[in-house]
Length: 255
Image (cartoon, rainbow, N blue to C red; front, side):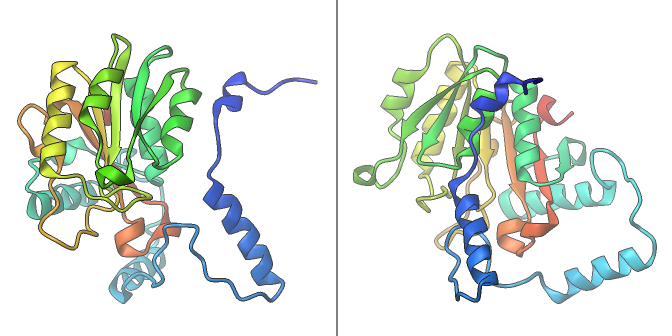
């Protein structure tokens, strides 16, 4: 019997999705379930959004579009980031993808080689190490500990950087801890990235869910725009989880 590619054995699924599947089975059987497994809002997209999609489909705007995303949408995203996060991003640096996982996969495929090492937070989104291993690279965790208020230990990160380290991934606000990395931590990560010439993937899917102050993106720090790829999307803040709309913002990775 023909075998599947060996890299598939390096990929791991999400436990939350397995729990979600079982929960839906129980619902079909008549059980009342409170869903705590997936990061999904308990409301639906705003009526103007739904109306706009309905109108677009009725008008026949359901054909293939530019492969990097509809130009007006990319421009609107760039404008939004400038207005809300102070990021000087051109529309040409925005890639619209079918969900954040695809955007993340494309970015990592563009930036790491087999044998590279990728630093990622633990705990975090399980796809980070899964994609890393699937691409033939080594996933190297750095801990987010309760005693440190779930902030990264920069000394630990620095100690784990080797000649093979190619990329550092982080997610702030963090999934699953909810921690927003401090300005000091973000600045220290930036300095490490510049010192060791690392790519940084900043997963900013929860950037709009900040209750104190304004969100600070590592992209805005000196020398970071050229080495940072932002992963973002519409799922969490705009309740569009099933719409599969993700965003990649960067330089070479999104070209």
